[in-house]
Length: 592
Image (cartoon, rainbow, N blue to C red; front, side, top):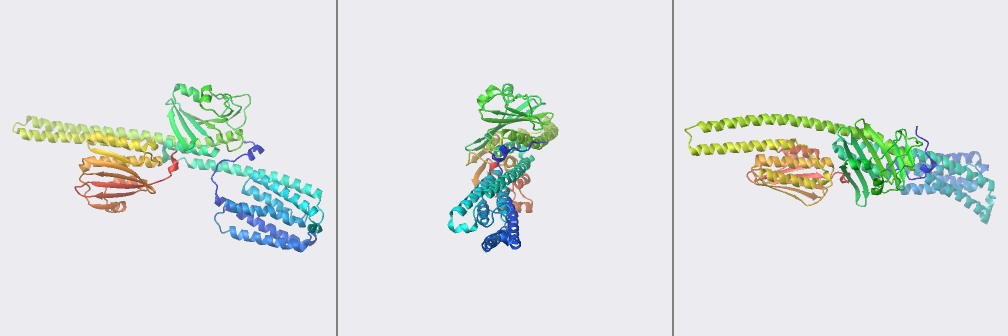
């Protein structure tokens, strides 16, 4: 069972979560309703006990004004879908000032207007949290002091009565007690809700289509933002493959930088911190190699145990605060998280405890992506092996047919030299075509795996290899050295270019082809054009027209549809073809 939140946690900065105006309007609606009920209750008390306030008519008039104010706020907030933080602050300022005015007419905690002080504290706690409730308490106590001074020093207010020191002390004590209890409960609830929301939000970032690397990148970036940390390291170990990987997300001036690499045996000793048998998390301070605190798997402190860092690691990664936790996602896969300089989420112990919870809850989802990707890789390998066998058998049959044709040519005595030369040329062309077809099919079966941030280099290399393999004058042009698109989009673009180039070699008879990737307003434009035969149709056709008439390259159409892009084909029989693909600029921030 998790310990009760500490007061030190409640006064520290909460986790970094996006602010929601729609959530704030719900709070304002509740407060507007309670405010109106409080105003009407005050009118009822004045009606039943008019002798408890003096002068009565002044108190009644001010209460009516406040009731109108409460009703106006309820009418204003009820139909709205959101409210700004500035509006909420102004409304709260009125809630804080109102008790100072109305309490002049009824002193003491038993008066009908003391609840307005409590309402101001409640509104601060519901809107914000512990710190704002404390500031509101200071303002309310200052108001009581100003009221007391005004009653004692201002001549035209002395008819309201002399200020009571005992009433002031009693009210102040009540306010402090109520403020602490209300603020503590509200802050604890908000922090719990923030933690639950952050876990669900981070779990939702885990997507199979992003791939393993893309998933780890997104999760690490979100965790770094959540804690306000400087750097996050994840060391993963696969026992079967004896593979240890280092994944790193670091916050810099230009944004979050994400890298990964495999660790050799020497580096493994440096990065894999030594943990005790019962320890699942640890915290270090001020570049110390030994931890000042350790937690077990249940998040409870362990006594008499320490975790240790390599001196070389501390020298290469200096820190003021470092948190580390161990994760065992499966028997064959384990990981360790190292978070540097977390600024949000409470004390180091609370931060480490939540880091453990967060990592252990998100790890199964990431592991599922890992399993699915591994299963897909195995299935793809099996499929490639099957297709390779089929191609091999087909190639063998084709070679046998060519061999028989050559044999017939060699034994045919009646053929002339010109006929034999022509026959040999045709056989040679068949062999070349068959070899090219086989090579193309094998290349298409290979998975497209590359770092999405290096899309330009990958496409350039693909076009260069295509030119060398086919002899077609292929060229790649890009007006931007860096393309920031989601990993799935980058892989689809690479697949489109590969399919388009294969179609040019198979069907167009082109001598030259050009692949161009350019930046356009709201997205990118991918163009593939050649000087070959073109399609069997002429003109300019959109994707909708191509699908309606069942024309054009089907595989490319499917890939463009997966991108939510737009395909246009310009073709002129005998004069080549041009493919134009508009790619929307989705989620550029998904790649650091």
